[in-house]
View 1: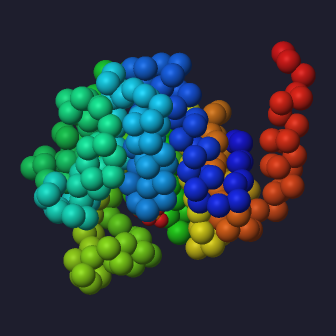
View 2 (view 1 turned 45 degrees about the vertical axis):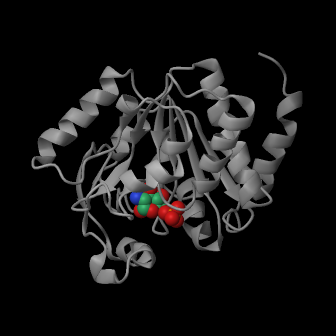
Length: 260
Ligand code: GLP
């Protein structure tokens, strides 16, 4: 795991966007794993800027989103379909048919989940997966005690997640109770993973995910088992890391590291 700590949200977002742009420049038909939530908004803004001002091309890109609420129509302002369209897809040139987001309104969840997993495989697997983290340490909607080899499936949301998300709805009762989500096992198959976190309310979850034991109680801790994860943090989210100095030292020494 590489831990990259930036002074603020803007610089954290720009550094993560640079990694995604590097993947696209290397592989123009890359498959991107997309995340929702407030955290990746700065990253999406920066990718849109790179598209507009530096011709970053998405015309051959395919995307798979991590998750979606069950029961919200795609036109609902809090659906992840709506979020992705408004904040990213409508601003870049990804062909519509290359965009995959789990369906929260399918009539057959098990077969949809199987189809979704198969589509990821058929498209060659995910080259780089973007992730945020819940305040209880979850990734996508893999709530505490999710199997670390879980696949795309229907998941009941935990109360802290419902409470965290209540701010986006008129009241807590309107927050969906179920979601469809890629599993931890699905996420771990991505070639590269980019985890982003900012703000003090993520500091505890980030410390547990990076420096704590691998446990299904903090599903983000499973990323310790992944060979190519980079974690982008702002100062606040990095506030409880014990190995902070080491992470900075690793980055500082990188350009001078002996060539293999
Ligand atoms: C939800 C999403 C996660 C996201 C998390 C944190 O639970 N399913 O993918 O990481 O919220 O959201 P935020 O970035 O708004 O803190």
